[in-house]
Each structure stands twice: as structure tokens, then as C-alpha cells.
Length: 189
Image: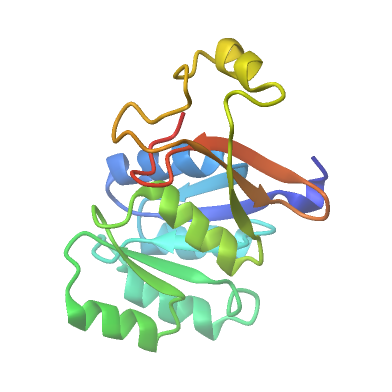
């Protein structure tokens, strides 16, 4: 993979479980992940780490909350154009309005949108495209794929019964990241 195709995300949240969950999901999707425990540390890393492409932040944090960090980032010429996605545990409409007024690209409510969909939203914002393609288990190398990766024999989701598909996410010119998923329940295989 060419170095210029690697995306770097800064995840800012005082909740270690939230940071760990999203760090894992973004890493699995080809991102370099930088983590911060609160707004002050996030602001410091956003201004000192080279090449931050996007910021994913919580709201309520000690020392400096997500809104205060966002205001400071927007005032800094080095960080003012970095897209920011705000993650809320509470989902209050006032918080949504404030986040969007400050320039957040999206307001994510934890537990409503699965982490993999958050990745897709962020990739789309970064100009990456995603395609979902039908897979036929009985065509070409379908059976070999099933055998090599211990997949369901008929490529049907064991969670909801839908036919599995391949999701291709663009990662630059002529390079894609592929994964097998259920387009109905979003389970990854």
C-alpha cells in the first residue's frame, strides 16, 4: 500500500472502552490511529502529530470537553480544515445542534450507528468510495474462498439469513480494501 493512501485518525475520548473499540475498528480498516484521553491532549496531538486526516471525539471529558477542543482546532490555521466527527453517549439534540454549528461533519450517537458504519461515513467524507457486490458461492473461486476462510457453505449470514456480499472501499487509485459482510445486519465475516 502506498504511504499516501494511509489515513490517520485522532480518537479523543476519556472512556477507555470507547477509544479501544474505535481504535480497533479503524486499525482493521487501514487507518493509523492516534489516541487522546481528553480535549487538551487531543488539541496537543492534533497540532503536533503530522498528517492527522480526521478527528473522532467525544463530548464530555475532563479538563477540556469536545466542544472546547473543536473551537480551538477551528481557530488554528494548521488544524482548521481537519474534518471532525463528534461521538455522543447521550444523543441530546442541543449537543447535535452545537456540534454542527461548530462545523462537525457528523454527530454520531453511540449505540445507534455501529462502529463499522462510522468508518464508512468517515471514509466517504475523506473522498473514499465504497461498493457492495453480490457474491455467488458457486461461481469461479467461491467454494475455495469458503474453504480457505471457513465461511458458511452457501455464503448466507448465520445471523439473519441474508446473502453475504463483498464490500470494496477505495483506498486511492486502483487500490481497494475488501471484506465480506452481511448487507442486512452488517455482520462482518
